[in-house]
Length: 502
Image (cartoon, rainbow, N blue to C red; front, side, top):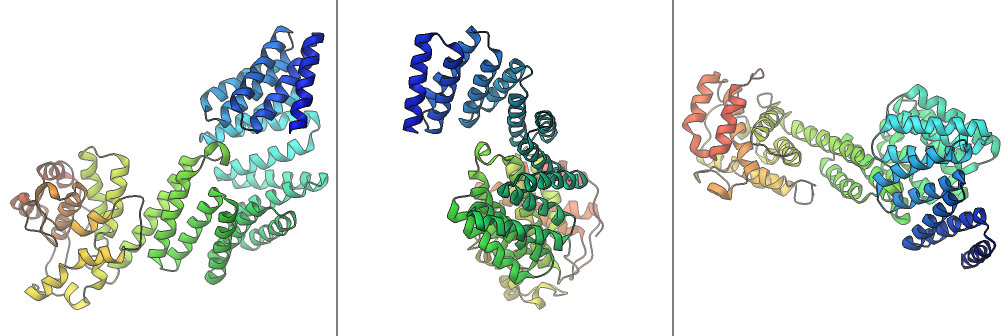
């Protein structure tokens, strides 16, 4: 690098003395790129701006466009995404018929569109990059474009298109002898086979890719290959092998500092534990994945981070819902209770104007609010008549036991107040801590009122479902149990809505 810098500085000095503006523009841009690689952003930017000014003064549009492309790359890497796109588009317009430059700029615009979640835009840019590479006869450029088109088609679940693009990319990579690119294509194609339940083909592709990456010493890529193999074993019921491979994926990702690979492998391991009924471990790894996705840098990892996190939160919801339903499954009277409580609670939360994060907290808390009932003896849970004082004292422990069961589980959302205090009442008559008034979190009060309402309107072991008007009369009589805003929101929404069958 020092020798390159010295040589380009000499070229700039000579070109300046000899008024060689073409050489000067090119040398400034290339030196700027080197300084950027050395993290001297300001010097890099100044040199690329000088390159653009010299090329513009010389009337050399192609060199001016090259300088703009370099400037856009600097803006992109420093986080100025919107300006980067504008600069790339200026470079594209100025570059005219320069096909090699056009292919690179379209590729860059495709990357920008992808990390901003504009999949259709990314597809269009990659297609135009491919067209330019075809015209140029740039086989490697074509292979990369096909590969990127395959990934984007897979994101849109256009499996036939993804199959076709990956097949074309692999064929070119093999013909030009690009081993690493072939490994990437095999690996990413295996994700398509996996989605289409072609498990043997998915495993064979991933294992072939793993062999390539092992020979090349590409440890980050090895992590991704282990992840796919682990998922194949999970989906085919070989849970011990799946756990081994997914843990290997995480270890490789951690050792190489690949946040994206670690996050995705943690998510897949959580799904394995969900399938095995190991819900607490599943939630532990999901929380780890959520934290890791929060650390992703869209520019560096070239991913749509918002889409990754949304997908992960869907997985959180699925696991928590399954766990909540498994708690109820032994009791035909209460099966579906958590689902209804979650539905009612979201209606109340929306009426109160709570934001998406608060609504997510309430939905997840609703699914787990009765978690502690797994420790309540079956004969108490299903008793046909009124509970004795001692039996009721046992029942009152379920919020505490629920919290104990989650003692080692962290969530991105604060569910524990809901679980412990969903039976606390505004007038201080609730349990387990006899909280009063504003001491009770809003989320717990919302779950409390809809929990009571669902218990009244569905059949239980000790009585039949009450008619709607009778249930509402009892809620009105007990309005002192809840905050006025929660009670009013409930009456405006849930009380007036259509009830699910009891």
